[in-house]
Structure formats: C-alpha cells, structure tokens
Length: 446
Ligand SMILES: *Cc1c(COP(=O)(O)O)cnc(C)c1O
Image (cartoon, rainbow, N blue to C red; front, side, top):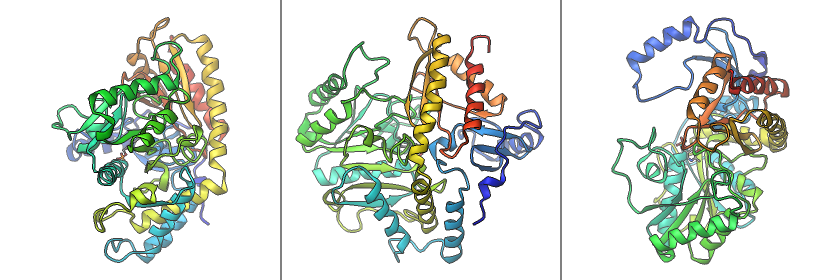
C-alpha cells in the first residue's frame, strides 16, 4: 500500500514568508478568475497534505488544526482512502445509482446502519454535501409526518442552500443579501451553558425551547426539530447534559421527527462515532457528510427504516449522490477509523488540548470558556473580567497562528471562538507545538 500521507515530513517548517512567491502568483491568477465571494482563511496554495501537515507550493509545512473544516479526520490522502479510490476510479467513475446501481453504495448504507446511534432497523440515502443531506432529511420528515413546520435553534448552522440558509442562524457571511428564505422555519433558544443564566440545567433549557416552539407553532404542526448535538459554526457549543434527551423525548411524544445534524460532529470527531452517543440520544434521522469519506464529497441521511421508506419510489435522489468513487473513499475512511480506533484517539486529543487550554485559561483572562469534546475543542475569547465577546483578539490570534504556520479556524455567532479540529491522526508532538503557537497568539502581549 502506498502510504502517501507518511511521505510528508511531520514537521512545521517555514522556508519563505507566508504567503510565498508561488502562492502570491496563484493569488493573482485567482483574483482574475475566481469569484470574489468565495473566501479562503489563508492565502497559501496547497501542494500536498497528510497526517498533521499541509505543505504549500513554496515548500512551507503548516500544522493542520482544521482538517479542511472537520473533513480529513483520517488525514488527507489517507492510505486506505487513496487505495480504495485508485481501484474504483479505474473500474467506473459514474453510472448513476438511479440508472444502474452498484455495490459500493449498498456497502456504505450498511456501514451507516451499523455505526449510527440506536439498534433499530435503519436505512440511508446518499447525497453530495451536508446541505443536501439536511434538505433531504427535512423532505423526508415533512413527507412522513404530513406536517410543514421545521424548528431550528439559535446559533445553528445547517448549510448555504436556500432551505439550509433559512435554518442557519447567522446573517454574516451566510445569509446577508441572499433572501427570501424558505418559509415554515422557526427558531427557538438552545442550551449555551457559558451564556445561559447561571445554573440553568439541560432540562430547563429544553423546556425553554419547547415552550417557545409550542407557543409559536403548536407541537402538532411541527414536522421536525433539527439540531447539531454539538454546534459547529455557531461556536462549538456543547449543550448542558440532559438538553438533547429532553428535546428528543418531547419530539417522540408529539410525533415530531428529531433530526441530529452530525455533519461536523460525526465520524469519531468527538471521541465517539457520533456526538449523540455521548448523551445516549437516538435521533430519528441523522445527517452526515464532512468526515465520512476522507475528503471526497459524500453525504447521507440515515434513519428509522419506516421514516426513510415513507417517501414514494423515485422521490429521493440526485445525479451524483453516492458516487462510486466517493463511496470507495468512505469505505476506506470508515475502515481506518475502526482499524486505528480513531474515536479513542479523539479522546486522547481531547485530553491534550483540554489540559493545555485550561492551563492557559488559569493565567489568561481573555479565555472565557474552554469546551468541546474529542478533537472538536474551542476557546471562547472575551474582554477580561466580562463575558463580552472579543472578536478582534480572536481574529488577531488566528492571524498570528497563520503567520507562524499553524492553520487555526475561528467560529461563533459573535466571531469570538477559536476552534481546534486537528486530523485524528496528528502526532502528539505536532499537536503540542500547534497549541504552543496558539497559546502565544492569545497572550495579551501577542
Ligand atoms: C458544514 C455543515 C453543513 C453543510 O455541509 P456542506 O457540505 O458544506 O453543505 C451542515 N451542517 C453542519 C452541522 C455543518 O457543519
């Protein structure tokens, strides 16, 4: 097996200024050819990536604390993914599952039934992106219930298509100027322990959400509640214990489909196969994408067989959904997670990051909160002595990380969260080095 990823030396190394001359050349070509609305966090152009390193076209090696936004959990160009893709791409690249089906699609759906929460009968349908999976989960829930209203929560992120923009909470950069949005979408409060009233329990936060939904819509009108079990773009918000299970129980009592959007939190990222597992929550439908296929575009809706089968034949699909090359990649990625116990590795990463960030919090008053699970960890940055968000320091700290050759991402409704999403295959040494750079970048002297 050609282990592409391990060929890249696992060391941070800056050999030019950032961005280097080749990257600057490409940036110029880009500005003439690529739409300005498509952004990039760092203006360095990639030559190759693997393990915990992204190598740019000038030969600089950066520590990857982003995994291409929680996608390359098994590493970029992970050996089993590369091998599966190589073989499949030489056999067939596309026939369309809706025209002439193939085994890889069935294999992936069988795997999804195995690893997603709950031991009930499950079925899946495959798509291309997280947003498309969310759209289809809502279609299925509406069809199965005969109801229309969909409930999302504060700080939610579900994608950039029309319906998923409506479900997404934050205007900039996701929604501003792109309306009108899909109707019959309602927003209720979530559980945000750092910003909720002191001592509010998960159960109380759930009652607050339920009351809002009941009063604004009426439980018997609601097709689905959709929620990220750990919120991603909205700020890596881990709800108080008991919140998700109380919400799921209310859905069950009222015939409402409970959709867990695990697009970012799924596939070992949080130290379990799915973030729902930590709370023993069994969603009716689960949406997945990002980490599912080691970097190839694939997404899924997996759920209770009777719900998934409610839709008429031909009612679900899409030209590319479950492309055979993407399916081969997913099988390689899932096999890697199993063989290398990447959920266990994510828990080790949680310990390394958590210990370091809490140590930092003790001496740096700008760190208001340290939270997350597994390799989905974050710090919320505030003005010292308050809970007032400090988006400026957050952006400045991310920029300092970038200048030092560390790929760090921000998020949060208030833009004041630094999030860490390293590949699960990063070495302890690289991770610790990245954390050192981050710690320096967050220090008041900078
Ligand atoms: C990224 C993300 C999406 C959208 O996925 P795309 O593949 O970008 O369409 C949906 N939900 C969550 C929770 C996400 O993090």
